[in-house]
Image 1 (cartoon, rainbow, N blue to C red):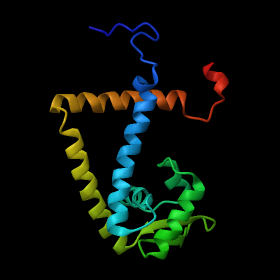
Image 2 (cartoon, one colour; image 1 turned 180 degrees about the vertical axis):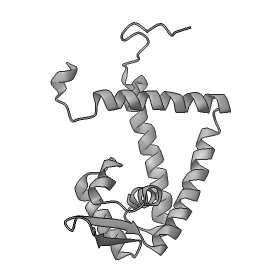
Image 3 (cartoon, one colour; image 1 turned 90 degrees about the horizontal axis):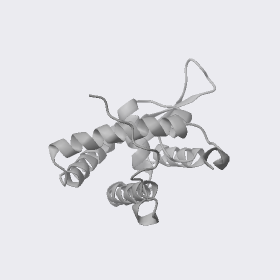
Length: 166
């Protein structure tokens, strides 16, 4: 049995407090502040260092451009955070042997230990956060997030002028 398409706009709440964009933004900000706060308390500044550490932990060595592609951070912030992580001995920079114009950022041994600790904290936070949902509701949430991410990739994949939406 196929799902019948919904009429455009039906059931979409546009009042500010109910708008999905607004609520996602508030939720993401609240979560990011909590993780950043835990990171700063344990490891110090920069507060967004945890984002780059977890990316390097997950994807391995990356260029600054690759790091930027995986985050919502502006490129100048990525560069400043990487500078700080290198100064603290958490990350290293090495010239790419294939393309000598590129610099590869990696976690040091210290960075790998910190990443394991951060992942433990984030895992605990995630479990505590999602325990409010049943297993079935969590599976539904993940499926909905996949669906919304795919749609966002279609309509927001490039910086578009507002005219495309008016």
